[in-house]
Image 1 (cartoon, one colour):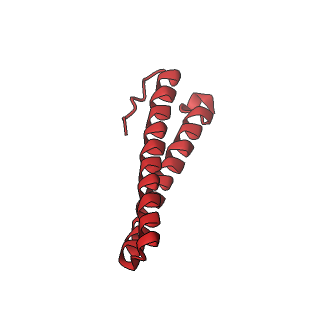
Image 2: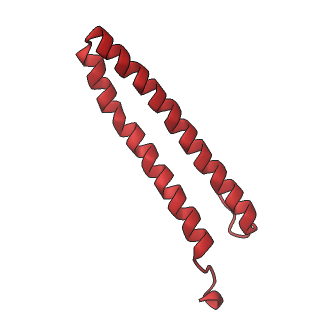
Length: 88
């Protein structure tokens, strides 16, 4: 994830946040694609140990989903919450 400078202009921060979000989604999509291939192969070969490994790796996909949710929430919060006491 790219870090943000609090003094950056809002549109620059938004671009960085959207880039971070895009990276998370692409990473998760690639991993899901791998998992589908592995699950299909396990089913075809009746390989229960491979099927179990696919299920165990689902936690990684869940963690990526949480990262995406957090990035979305952070972007929304930054766009909608006043950052200085004078804006309250």
